[in-house]
Image (tube, rainbow, N blue to C red):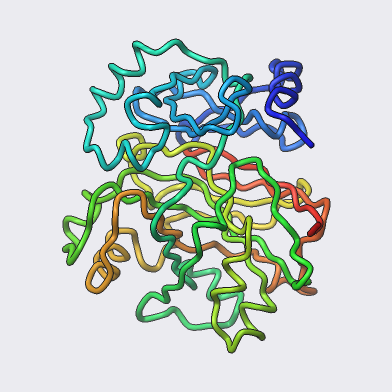
Length: 335
């Protein structure tokens, strides 16, 4: 079994391999085979908040909450005030200035020495939007929808940015879907579209892993089991505060499997934008701090390739979004 201490040792040996940026269109990503899968953190040139949840050898299984340094090499532990939990911080309504002050007082930890967890680990809701990229509709020969299609995933699907994805025995059609995830910042009910972005806390990278046979052919055509199997929602590497993201609808988004690019799109292709999604959902469902919305995936999923391609044990999925970072997840056999 891999221990946190062994992860730290392996990471420190590869510290010279870490490069990259969390910045804008000039971002260059680390080659997927060139870095330890536990250590992808990019450098920041903008003074804004990037939150991570993590564990260390010293804290064992206890979850901690931290703020990344601007160069991405250190984490300032602010757990004591916020119970080691991002949702607790969001609910507190604390200002970024206060968070920065707390981080400045904390003794920094080297990123090499921590294991990153998902930036949000127990949201009340994970809402997803299907068929929300124009080219994803085209690859299925489906018309552009006139209203969004919503479905959900359970919080038990969430794993960290470098955790394993289980190839569950009951499915042989497990697929990839890189997505922009929105993290809600305050209670939202009957929100007007014009004000909807005020309710966003930040963004992260997501993989909406899907068992297509259970999504499409079994369970009466209901998505729930096909979308909600354990480990089917890797998130990370950080929750990037919205103040850093100039326009979430102008971000490059891509996914590769075993180093081969499968998806390459832009959030500019979103059919229903984030403000529209929030306005529509909150007409009938109250969103709470920490709730996560997966906004859809671009073209290039395995199911619609010719011939179809599906994930198998040993495969490695790299998912990245401009300015937000990159996650890497290995597919493992169901034990």
